[in-house]
Image 1 (cartoon, rainbow, N blue to C red):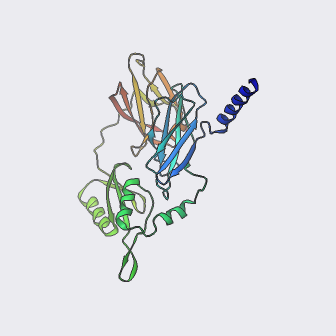
Image 2: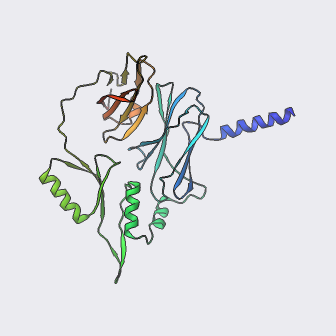
Length: 300
């Protein structure tokens, strides 16, 4: 009986450690529209875990799930907004002791019978009618370039190139137009408004409405120190329930701290991935008390 119990314990131990432990995780395709994100957490003092998703392997990550019990040794999440043929990347942010922040490397979901992304795309979009393709673009906010084709009496003829326009950020689809319509739209924006268009790819444009910027006043609660750290300074942290959310220059959410339990929290530059302006929203018990920005310099 003792030998049997020892075998069970050893088997469980080997199984646990054979799985990916943070910062490693697994992203497995379980159907044409589902991906399972799973991980093993070896940190008993883990206070927050966030699964993030992007269509770019380095930028534009957005939090899609945060478990209520981040300290659990094993956990996971199923992304129902997945579609084979689109490049989608996942990563995990985890926080230790409310002060130490770590990001995993980004990865694409795979399965045992993994097919290269280019082959998946050509098979998926084969003979699809235009309306279905446009709905797919709206649903996924795809960053790809598509050249659509349809049937005519003379056979297959190319349709006009489709351009996807977002407003302010990647989460707000504004409209989808062809090349000729986009020229008129672009001319109207440049001659009749102070708005600007940001061209990130040939068919991917962000409309940035003009907003008169007030004089910037640095925050006294979240700011960059002369040593390059971002400091969260909250002397009244014991009396209030503070939380903060950070955003990149395109207003995409980077990560959040749900409950700050220290008067000073230092964030390293590596948490923000690149130099430039970053934004934050500081809350007290769910109420917004400050919205501001800070600058991460390239060299300290």
